Image 1: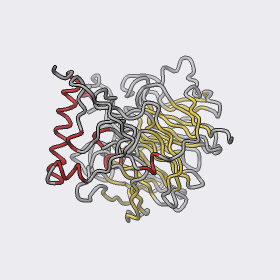
Image 2: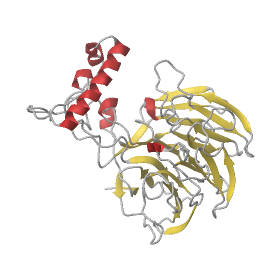
Image 3: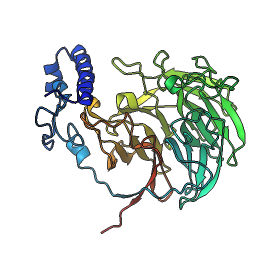
Image 4: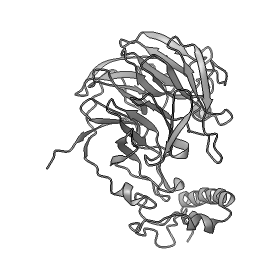
Length: 406
């Protein structure tokens, strides 16, 4: 009997991955021999009707939330309860679509989000993408209608101003959608707002990609240091331009930059997906494409590289140097080394202390989810509650509170 179409398509895709591994290692057998399989991966691929692509490149048939994970990662505790009903969308503000941008307010209680309007992009939507909710999830205010193309990352500075990265140009949007004639250019910028929604500053040239001092190549995230210095992670998906960190002074004047993912064999897509800064002023770069966090000083000197926090789509470091890393893309083609969810640890030592698995887990090759699901953005309030935002499925910002001590 012929395998289902979706399975045959997945098998074809994994054939391509196998070819890449052969080129990189010299043989498929060598790639297999270098993997360490977890004994808890029980087989679920039985019969001719179900094929499990990936086994030929070293991915075992079995539980895709266990296979290839280290014992240390599997044994991490999850001391949190999940609340999916915490955020209450107000009437008249539209539906909550895809959301990656999220950040706690300076009051340590309220939460800001920048949703991609009612779907996965804000072109012609007319709704406010930037929204604030109080500690109980009640709506406080919103703004930003018709100013954004594709909100992606967010930062709240020491003065309470809201900074948002608008990653994609509306002149060359995802899906190749052509904007109506006369539509002003927008997107591919950094926008700074006052706490009440007044636009205070923009960085970059609206709608125009580039790689000079004042043109961005899909800026995905930013942080603002206590002295006002602005660090921008530039280079989300445009592979014809080298991803980089760009640095500006508090007035928006270009200072310097350094390139990312220059090491041999590194993928250059998604290697500047998220940013965070610890109490020492070190810059943590979420290199989702290569499954690592890379740590730099503020001049661009590489200090360290961590691979124990999954595939970091979103990063947040609180005032106590607790680091939170959201993983929304671990899956079979990346070896199932991690499960989608949120890793929690110490930004000083790199020790991982807890893991919150996503409720959907990792997709299996015969029933794949879309490329990103579950927590993509992450933040935490002053009481230690964790909040995750997600691109897919639409319409959810989850709250995680510590379980009562027994």
